[in-house]
Length: 209
Image 1 (cartoon, helix red, strand yellow):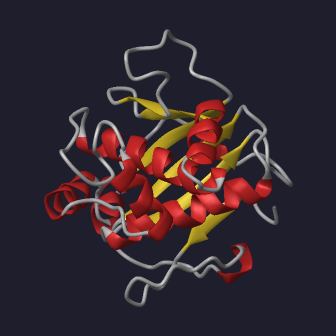
Image 2: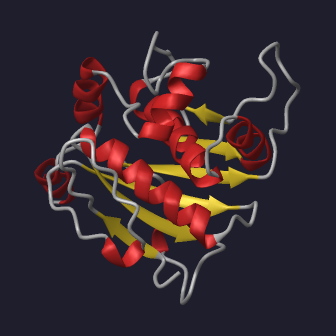
């Protein structure tokens, strides 16, 4: 990877999916930008991580939110960013990439991810992501993106699930088909709630004065 700091923008024309590599990304300027601090404890490939970040950025962009990815630990070239050791602030979340779910299975099996809403961090589990991705004919990076975005959604919206879309509790055939076609996303009410959950740039600057 060329940099540990990745501020990403995708221009979306209709339902067009941009499968471009990292050098095709452009900077997003807007008043709602979420900083995602990533700790990779599973050693995922650069290509899967790039796909996760690119697609997750697209999903958040459709909701009116920019995404800034900060790498900590693995995938670094150069000194570790100061944000890796700082306390989380409004407008930032922490995402852990972990090999496997550490708890016991429930009736649905192991989850693809979990979110500690009060603490501001989430985890996704690559072993189960790989299993479900293979079963549904998806690249690992694609399902990583949806799992990560679902858990980021919890960190911003709270623990409740919705009856459809990316925030549904259990994804079925229709949802996996939507992932493959890149149309599965947040509902209109969820998009508005996401915008309310992230401080605008001018509000953050005012808080620093």
